[in-house]
Image (tube, rainbow, N blue to C red; front, side, top):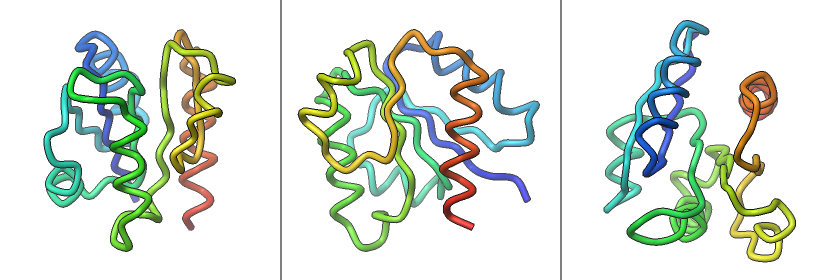
Length: 122
């Protein structure tokens, strides 16, 4: 069964690269450049996993993640934070995400991380 990924990143090139990478690997990929209402986005796309940029124009991804992880209807969805900030800096302000990948990341590592968190949900 195909898994659904929601990629939230303000960088259009990253969104496109990840979509082009994951779709041929049998994922259904939706992308957003910003999020005004994360629950509306969740309901629309029903993702199995979210890749979330830490630094977004309308606020940090940690706030979006905190909203997801604080809600009984979405707390179970794995969130992988992707960021140009060092992992150690992000971990100081941890808001419930399940994994962190620092930019630049390599695609095989990203794919392995996605698979690991999706397999946890089975």
